[in-house]
Length: 468
Figure 1 (tube, rainbow, N blue to C red):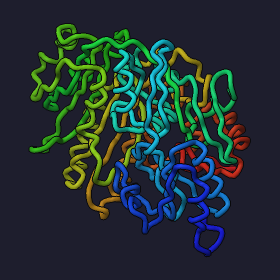
Figure 2 (cartoon, rainbow, N blue to C red; figure 1 turned 90 degrees about the vertical axis):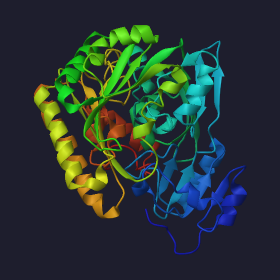
Figure 3 (tube, rainbow, N blue to C red; figure 1 turned 120 degrees about the vertical axis):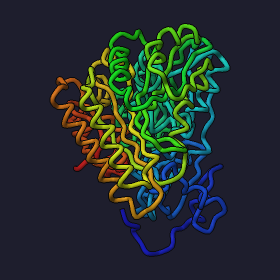
């Protein structure tokens, strides 16, 4: 969307209309800092940044953007590698000043403002002995992860994040501030649980909380790639037999300082160390080359993957899915493809492949059409998270990421039944998927509601692209 006029934007008028929020322009203090993102490749220069402190000011900003023909982007945690939380020459609604989390211990609910990150939620909930299903990297934004689905260490017990969302406040394109739940504006509530980024700006979320005992156990076990078949066999069995108390991620990476290709398994057990070590005994008997597992508290668990998910550098991501048992030949191919790639592009040696072995039993208990989210099935997410430093490698890194996603998707079609789309929209960091790809059997209803609530497609940066 191009500005409707070449005249300077009336920023003074916007600032006067805001009640407690700030409007930043390129000459403002704090403007440059507001552009920083998890991926440097996703940073763009907005014409104006509204650092919102209320839903009312979000509404004001949205109406201003439309009056002056400005593209709208929304910033929460800033993890999107597709650039959806940035805009070149448009208006950025920056929610990072809205991070308050309140807990109702008697109702067992957790309410987070739209700019909160998962660390905020985990710490606040822990004060009352509660937890909810959050992201596995705790500096990820609550908003982006929730609106697109949300998988985490507790998904085996409680399903994805959206299954635990009980209410949300969302600002629509026309400036209306709506409360949504199963009972209030239920059609909008149906839509935002999976397609929320395409419907408005979510300024608060209320989640169902659960009693969470401590200690729990988790951490990293690294193996030589010769252990691949046995590690994958263990993971395949885990998701088939777990009662939700355990989960693991099997990664392929090349950690410093040697940058040798390794298997990086991150483990979780909802219990003490003695129980956990007995449960994972078969892995310990394989002889890990690194053991950074320990007893811990749940509020620390969502930082276990932070080490491979730090801010900085250039990044892109693409997801796909696999079924279990994961064929050993496919796993070996992934290791070989990864090693070949970082050998040919040494700048990308921080790239990592992550296979999420989170039980899908609770995910698939909910009907495919219960909400817009359509990735319910007996398959498991895989993420290609590519990281490099030089802009000259942008094209080759993005192409490799797309190709790897496509390769696994082609394998999935051989084994997958008709459950779910087999693609997690939050992992489409290369914007290569259509709305039909992401929403599957729910697409027609999502499209109908999109036309109703956002007929001008103001919110055009969400997962899956709408054409109407």
